[in-house]
Image (cartoon, rainbow, N blue to C red; front, side, top):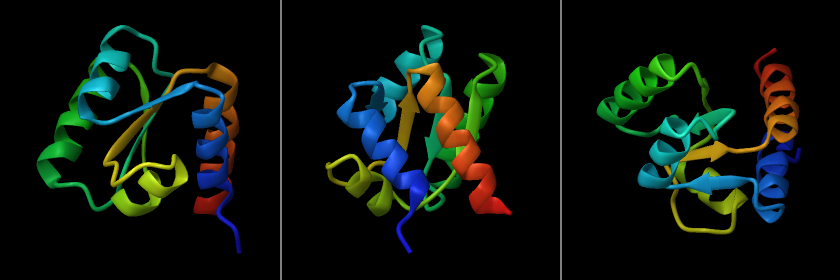
Length: 103
C-alpha cells in the first residue's frame, strides 16, 4: 500500500510549500507561516518536547508521523526529523490523510 500522507508531503515539497530541518521549521512556526508541523516518531524525546512546547505556544497544529528516514525520503532528502507545511490547503489535505491513517 502506498502511503498517502507521505505522497501528499512530497507534493507539498515539489510545490515549494514545505520546509524541513530543525531551524527552518522553527523559523516557519515563529513567523506564523507554518500551518502544520510533522515530527518523526523516532525523534528524540527532547526534540518532541521542544516542538510540542513551540507549537502549543504559537498555536500551530502538530502531528507525529513516520520515521526520520520516511519523512526524508518523501521530500527527496536525507533523514528529516521535522517538516512544516506552509500552505493552508496542503495542510488541510495532509491532516485529512493523517486522520484517515489513524483510524
